[in-house]
Image (cartoon, rainbow, N blue to C red; front, side, top):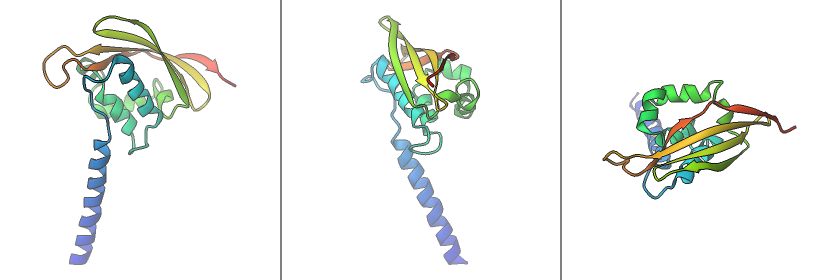
Length: 157
């Protein structure tokens, strides 16, 4: 009995240890990242959504969501359901993407993002980021304040 409990403990410990290491692999906002970098980090994470662990790309994207955006999308669990839903699921494990600066100011930038999804359909998004201006660990970090609903641009085949 003790041997079985010890084996179970070891398995649980290893799983928790691996999850904590994996979470350490996620990138956190800091002032070294420019507006474009933030969008690129998020899109690469979504493109490789389950690479580190299940839905790590969604969590990575969540890390760079502006607190005002998080108030709208809800906590991570709700955000995950939103990204997996019909409106944004084409971002998950997409084939390729392009990011084009549309306009910007000192503390904000808007990008046009085009994504080629798994079914070889192109989708366009408007992706807006802003510098966080309040005090705290996010001060002066670029964070996503909004992503539009996708506009289908048709199939590539």
